Image 1 (cartoon, rainbow over the protein chains, first blue to last red):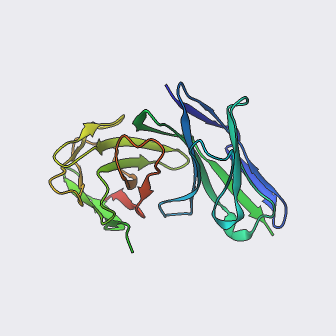
Image 2 (image 1 turned 30 degrees about the vertical axis):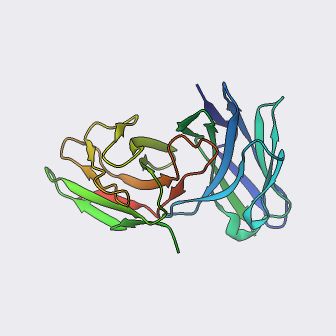
Length: 114
Length: 115
């Protein structure tokens, strides 16, 4: 069975400093991995996805994530935080052969300080 | 533009009342999903539908019902049997239930509160 761990429930950074949101997963098969962002009272927006192509994935709004199979990790990074990045971020694992399983992590709330 | 429309944005339920949340998609996706989100918590799957006229219970289906009579529509009814319905409800769709490498697309949610 799949599972996702987001190691930090809350991350706080200053504007203009790097962002690192950590995600570790467990999967029996070849996983697909996704990062979503949720602003208050809004739905989830897809930031980026890994689907067994390049291990370094670039997404929208300057975010990127690196798939590391040996570490079972898919951490999300951004070089320079902007105030508009303050939101909840969810890491998701899905197994290619078990498409109905789309497992969400518990989320990490990102605060950006001026 | 293609997308998912949830309505209403805010909904209030009286004791003993059933309420229905609407979810419509024009993405031509086969699979659709309903999630519940409580403050500070992640998403929990209520029901999902792999194809028209089919639906399956998720992790927290008790007190909820769904139908899937049209590909575009997947309404969720919160029945009076659901004793703690106050939450944010999210509808999602995916091109196909078995395409594990494809993302789910989300609507903007409905916030349900008890009067």
